[in-house]
Image 1 (cartoon, one colour):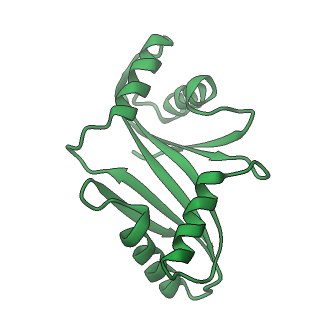
Image 2 (cartoon, each protein chain N blue to C red):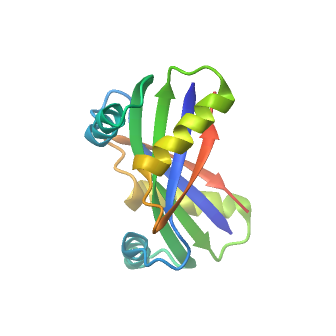
Amino acid sequence: MKVRVDVMLKEGVLDPQGKAIGQALGTLGFSGVRDVRAGKVILLDLAETDPARARDAATLMAEKLLANLVIENFTVTILE
Amino acid sequence: MKVRVDVMLKEGVLDPQGKAIGQALGTLGFSGVRDVRAGKVILLDLAETDPARARDAATLMAEKLLANLVIENFTVTILE
């Protein structure tokens, strides 16, 4: 079962990578970019075939390793 | 208009970050993790209000800056 975990910095946490991307887009001539936020995506291929259990497992993995819950939020999406 | 750009390493390109995450999950006692791929997500807040134009702009940004097309694929998703 394929599961996707998105990890983004929480609202209000400074995002230097996003800011750098925004500045670089401006330098390249792209206008109308109001804000940029950068994050991580982790695609997990799990042996688990039950969607609810796969979601629980991925949530635990995110809490234990993939996300820093002090500064980051995560979302789990079951893909297939 | 909010647009999401996902950037992932192409199939067949070695993904050391994904491998490291997979090993760390194993060390933490998570079993049944067959594969892990790591990528980036960039959330753009664009002044453009037309979805088709916003998609075109984000695609151009991905081609010019956000993705390295030699080793990475990207997908553009209009969020709102």
